[in-house]
Image 1: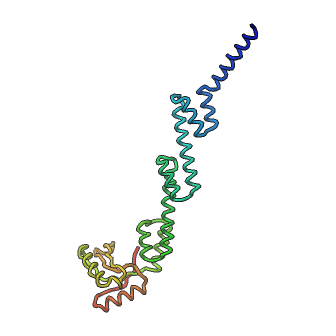
Image 2 (image 1 turned 90 degrees about the horizontal axis):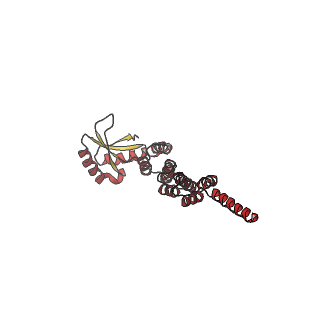
Image 3 (image 1 turned 180 degrees about the horizontal axis):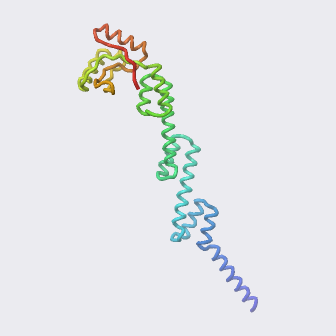
Length: 224
């Protein structure tokens, strides 16, 4: 009889211990100690309405965000950082991911511009990326290889400037490479019709051809 009572007491004690080991408080401390997505998900599956359920969800989101960011950094590429932005649009590293995408795209565009190294490629780069170290290098390069224009006319009206540009492009487009209208700057109210940017030698040659055809032309330094 005594043995039976002791056995019953032992069973009750074991049951109490097991119950204590699987209580929300204990399981939450265990999830915290492991600090993994799986541990928090297990806690939520057992105690979806527990006072710590909100914390568990927040920690799962934070861990998933860190995993996605780590994956993006390992990939170290534009597609990798874009994938992070798609997966974690409100993540802690969104600003850094966007900066990486912008930086890498700018560097890729600069490599292409350097490979071509034409006035057009450099100007296109500057239109898209007007500031930064690469933009300063592009401007310096433009001054070296294409720091001049052949100026053909100046008019006060944009409408007249566009008409004159079209007529000159039709007549001298091949010689001038491209005919453009420059908007008035701080020193003048006139619209200027000029060639594309080119080297000083090419600008002088273009002006000589235009003058030979009976039109006025002068070589000017390209600004900007």
